[in-house]
Amino acid sequence: MQRTEDWMREAEAELQAARDLMAHSHWSWCCFTCQQSAEKALKAIGEHFRQNLVGHNLNLLLRDLQGFVAIPEDVRQACARLNRYYIPTRYPNAFDRGAPVDQFFEGDAREALQDAELVLEFARRVITAP
Image 1 (cartoon, rainbow, N blue to C red):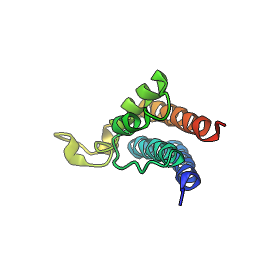
Image 2: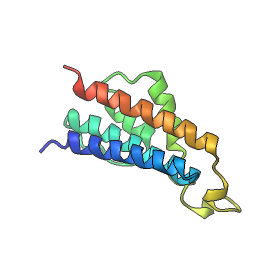
Image 3: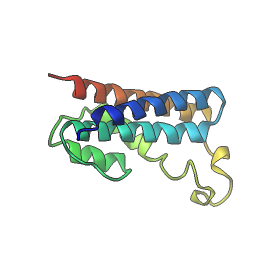
Image 4: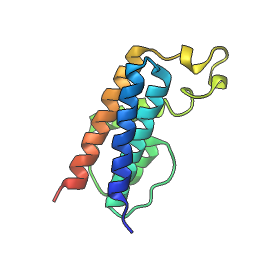
């Protein structure tokens, strides 16, 4: 059973959640949610090509997809930036001192939102291509 639409719907829902977090100044969680949105969009592409992608590393997910679709450089760069938000946005022990809530700022969240939007646009194009 192909689940492309389910993965994309979840990616879209998480992008909206990230926007809501941005509106409430929760920068670290916004960054993490953007990473999650991009991950699910990439997994939607995998489903589209009947590939069961596993893992959370966006760079590795792109590597697994490159045999099926050309990956634009701006998407690669966006994923590389978002990839950095998977662990340190959630765990205080990612830093020698301070909680994640103190380590990420509005600029980080804005960039993460732009990057996630770019990845989702790419996924939509791939999935709807004839």
